[in-house]
Image 1 (spheres, one colour):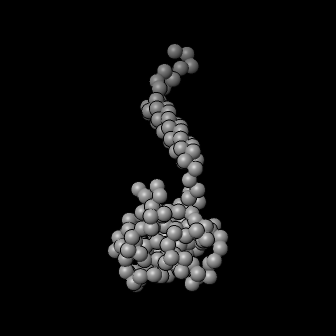
Image 2 (cartoon, rainbow, N blue to C red):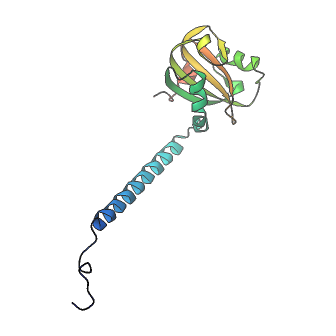
Image 3 (tube, rainbow, N blue to C red):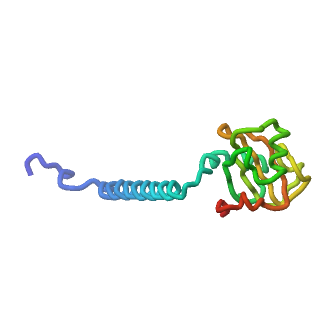
Length: 156
């Protein structure tokens, strides 16, 4: 036994468990990155241009005071908005050109329950208009129903 103490032939407890833990963590990270890369590739292949507006979701959600259900998001040119009430809200706010993010929520809304209300005094749809690209709130337009053009394929 020369030079070998009692601990020299024993493995440290938990060493194998730690290796398995690192291996499991690395596997999860690789799987998650592959999944995210796949989603990104799929998203890009769909040709959707609305993705820059998803960063504005916290501002839009705050504008409806965390009520309602997310219904969709669109990045649109001010000159091609599908609904007169949206155009009026932009004109009243002094936004006559460029692009805006539209974020729609369904639920029961009143002008006293949203930030920067515009349009009807109540409705089952709130469309939050945000400047693009800075994401600043322009108006929250209350409507009875979702404009058909907005509906495209962005509803979940």
